Image (cartoon, rainbow, N blue to C red):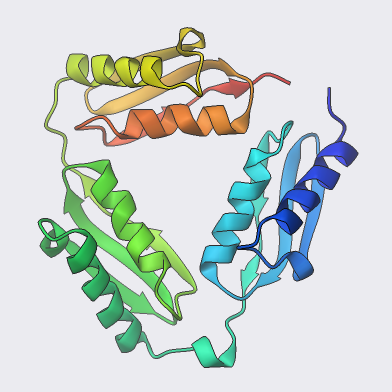
Length: 217
């Protein structure tokens, strides 16, 4: 079993190792395997990447991301400019569904609303907004419209789990109730847990994934 000190050291090293994150002003605290990130970075994408880095470390049970985004003065932009750029990116990345998405920007924070059929459209819209200069954060309120039966959803997710080289599918149980999916079981790392959830979200018609998979310590 890994100690909190071991985890803290490895998270700090992982942050330093990532060229996409300036870890100079990031603080790391660990208690009972739960990592808390504090401090500040100069972009929203760095804040999210720091969280991803922490989740990769063995022994991490959960991450509380309290990092603050402090934009350089050169990156601060008016909300209308940010909104126009978000809309342009949505048109580029989602040419057939962007019209179903509404963008609201307030004080640099982007809120995405509307409804799409596939979760990849929802996540792609959020990714498009994250990369816009001047964005401090993104709230993804886009809904999903289910168009598949629970039996189809369950079968497609189980097939995807079995195909994944990163997972031991025999240790994961899938339940589908309408368009909502519940994942249960035990995996070896946070990365495996995330991979199982990613596979579930890729199934057509899924509107919610309740990930109850635990991590063996």
